Length: 324
Image: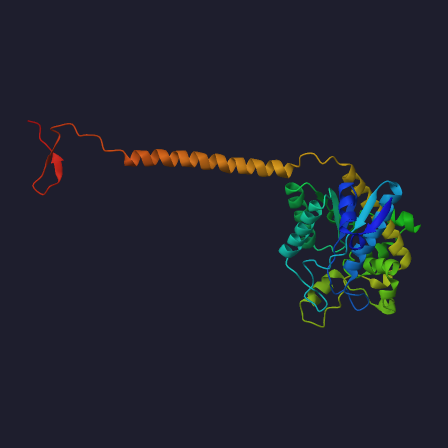
């Protein structure tokens, strides 16, 4: 039906959309150095742009679906130690997503998706953990397809699909470079050429390949030696960005559609928590019973000694009496 921007809604509209089953998309991406040819906000820009493209795809497939896109969150974890990177702890990223999920739940939202284009393992883990914790404790179902999407993309799982949309196959040399292209290289430069070409410096075509192994050693050798990218920016083109983006949007929309059709039911996390609390209570009860029993035994008076078995020694101590 429509795509809304959360920041443009009144509180009444926000609450109505939440209670009427609108899907909420939450883009998140940190500020991070992306080489000399791209801005520090690449992950933030791409999270927003992909969220909008996915929202359009979902509403195209389901004309009755309403989607609300939250403002992009400019934070993330596990970034390079370089100028241009605004680093926050993993716990902060997780807590922020949890807090936002809790607030959406308070507004009646029942389905929300967190989207990111920053592929650091700890960043993705923070998002997954936050989604699981919120979904287990609240009524909202919070989900993120980003971990699975990024892992499959970087491992070459979408190669055939991208080639089909692109209309040609990659050469062996092209794919060798693309398969080791992890940061601010051909892929991210191509995405920016599609979504924000005004922010891409023209000299990206002149940048030499910078493989991951070489870059990982240069990164720790001192400020000024790190180039800010791992891969081959010169391989990028708008056509490559459009083809790869189409595949990722289609796949993401399909995963989110399956998520929307999933019955909320009783989530395993709630049963796990209840079982854990019950187990703790049971152990506490058994422990208290055993403690009370041992205490009663220790406080009970000693049994009376049979007469004639002991007698007082001269120093006051008891000793065995000889039988008469």
